[in-house]
View (tube, protein in one colour):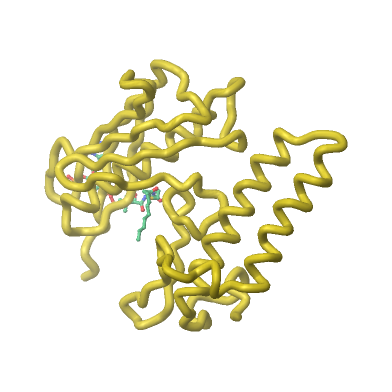
Length: 213
Ligand SMILES: CCCCCCCCCC(=O)SCCNC(=O)CCNC(=O)[C@H](O)C(C)(C)COP(=O)(O)OP(=O)(O)OC[C@H]1O[C@@H](n2cnc3c(N)ncnc32)[C@H](O)[C@@H]1OP(=O)(O)O
């Protein structure tokens, strides 16, 4: 298998479905280790790590059993230059161990995501770090812009209002929609909700780069 973490994109090689499933499984184990390292102390630490490493070892011994009947959530795709592109997105990609990952459940005029945040995203006790609320909202609003405007756009301004803390360890919803399109500029807004109540609100501006001369 290619050393995907160090190889530049154009040196990555195509991979089987089983390897994509294995990579996503390994990212999931990394996520569980990251959370467990924060909640496991003293004598529990070694058995915890042995258990997690054991899950990974078992998958390595029989990656085909792991992949049987299942599809990777984010299989590598070919980019416009025909190179293999791994889904690196740090919010939604199952292959990225630092992504929660946030899941798109509805896409259209309004985009809806769901996500459950574990301990590694904690700011105040049992609550989401505010900077990470901005990350979730940036991604969700960018997606609403992406779905509703043909040109690719990048975040130019993003304003967050923190009305209530976002809880960890339970499903939260992230909503996003476009409010105005004005040439290269697209304005969007959205919210993070928990238990039906708005915790954070965002609005911002996305701009598509000037076409090259
Ligand atoms: C393949 C992509 C995968 C993406 C994955 C998900 C990513 C999630 C979203 C992100 O996080 S993107 C990453 C974070 N964003 C960036 O890194 C963007 C950095 N900024 C830029 O690259 C440039 O500033 C940008 C391309 C966004 C715009 O550059 P321009 O030079 O084309 O914009 P310009 O400054 O000319 O502004 C365009 C227009 O907007 C106006 N404008 C700028 N700021 C404004 C403002 N705050 N309010 C109202 N209007 C504003 C500006 O006056 C101007 O108006 P006019 O067209 O009428 O002249």
